[in-house]
Length: 160
Image 1 (cartoon, rainbow, N blue to C red):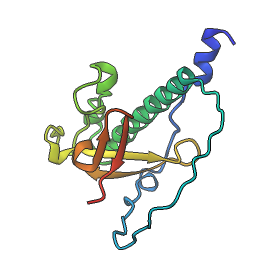
Image 2 (cartoon, one colour):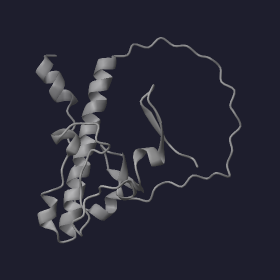
Image 3 (cartoon, rainbow, N blue to C red):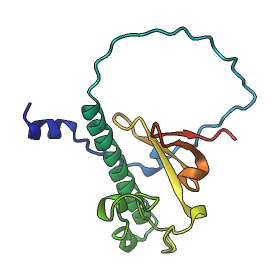
């Protein structure tokens, strides 16, 4: 496969959603009363060939499509509240300015205020992205809601 064809095959396109209210669902509730005993695991080894470069390209493409979905969602949300002029100011910050600012999408409340303070941040968790996109929102920053492991690049929801 030529380089251009490989890039095209990896590109993800955010799905179009016409019903905004259907996309947002309640965040899952954690039942802290349930405790699982530590399972006994047997070490099983199986040879696997992994293309880490392909996997990284696919993850990057999927992440970008998710961010673009949130930009489109936020623009549509602001328009649905009768503030179409504000929708033009919704910005894909990680694309226009780069990573490292602590957020990927700049949006606005219908009052016109930007979300500049941590208490006003919304963390979106998208799932079923390819087939029937859904997402839930958690208030605050990623660090407020998740335990971050910089060695594995994993973020897990806080249980307490």
